[in-house]
Image (cartoon, rainbow, N blue to C red):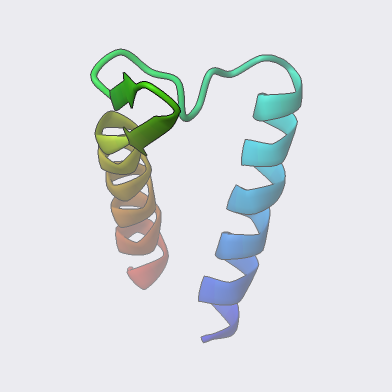
Length: 64
């Protein structure tokens, strides 16, 4: 359990640093954005897929 928490903390710090340097996480091509009038809907599907793949690889690496 402690390895997972450490890995999650490292991933969050790295993502924070990358976003500060200009990584467009959350604004990738393929993210769904609908704006009509004064309402909007946003679903970052590509961002969710990328984060899911990265986390799956990290957890598989630490599981061994």
